[in-house]
Image (cartoon, rainbow, N blue to C red; front, side, top):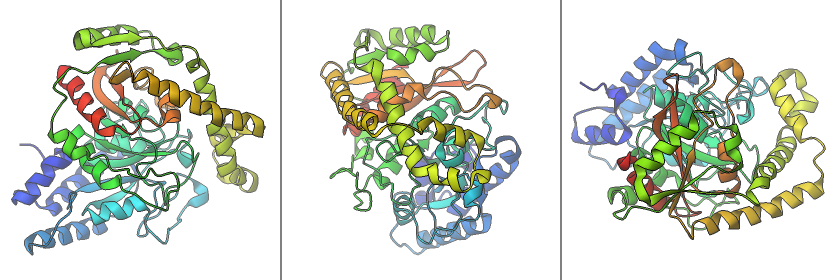
Length: 441
């Protein structure tokens, strides 16, 4: 019999509404499993079991009373520790913010609570969502990294401690942990999930995202979070993607035109990745073909780095100057990389990013979806850091929606994801194309 904590969010939701499962039973199963695995995985920086159980009891009372319920009613969710919660600490993975208690919920937190979700706790993030790793280990092998910066969010879902969690990506912090931990990850189109109440790292690049163990679950949470919020000045006018409706239609009926790209990122790929993806392309059949990426894409990675590093200096530089003893050496190193970027170079990078956006969009004139590795290979050893974000940077820079499908395995038996990339603003279409690819594999 499947244990309650092993259920997907969609299955748990159906069981709760059918009366076959209570929210309290689900929360208890998740908390019990988390406690058993905490020493090995370490996905959480804050848990309040009493608060979670009280929220579950209230969710069950609402069901018993026949009151209205939201789409995530009674479902436990984890939040990356850069997302504000008024009843829990939000510490940015930093000693400097130890014990910080926000006075209000972030927009994401509010939307989740309004949908009936139970915020079970805060998951471990690297310091300030950069690269200074926290305590979290890969649930498949604790000697290896879960990736970063959304380390705890990906690991908790992969280890069946929760069915859903929120992370964020400024470089490769959503898709890479999804690949290393073997779960589905979603970085939506830029400007479709509000960042109000989320610690900023680089405003032009910061994307909130979702982890789950199925595309259906990502769609369920995506429809809750993709809501217009005037507090985030970069939000699109119509962020809703109607993902649940798209997923309910199933995979596209006509095989999509699939472009497999390597590009300048491939120089970082592990030697075995070529054979893995040659096999994938063969399995996908005549609808898939390799497409060259050259020209302006050679400079796109440097463009991303310039924009990200300059923003890191702007957002974190004061911490380094005023309280260097409370900041990790790795964070100090990353900020130092951005020192000295000239205003002229930053403006050129911002303007060049528009050219890259147009070039990526032009690719979709000739294909429906792009696939590429979600990481250079399987998760490296924990002592080697959180991994290389090179396979995500281009798609973060251009703000296009991306999904990770956990379909591959490396030589050490660790998971590797396929990154599936859609056209800007066409998140629902991406889901249906990704479903076709997942079914074909």
